[in-house]
Length: 132
Image (tube, rainbow, N blue to C red; front, side, top):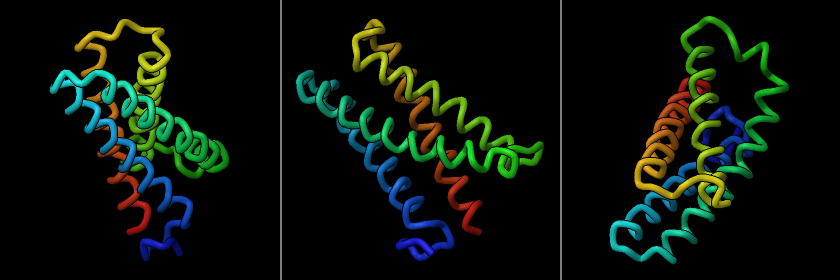
């Protein structure tokens, strides 16, 4: 039982909180960019990508060891596949932006932000479905 009072593990609870915190930090970076404070925007984006990357390591480990049990043609299985694909897109775009491997345009940053938001949304839904 996790510390959030669910049947999920404590580490899963921690990852959920880390992902939400990372997204909130990314959102703060978005606000800094709107206010033209690009130094703070840069720092918050890097922190968000670091948190996302570290929690991805745990989630990919969990996915690999539970792959056959999780992936199926059920609604939840398809949701997991969608979550993984969009999450990988968000993470790799975030890493590419942070490492200056991609042009830092409004469009590329918006796609990264929106894909991250979609990933967080479906991640929370999966967490709720898993503990139900």
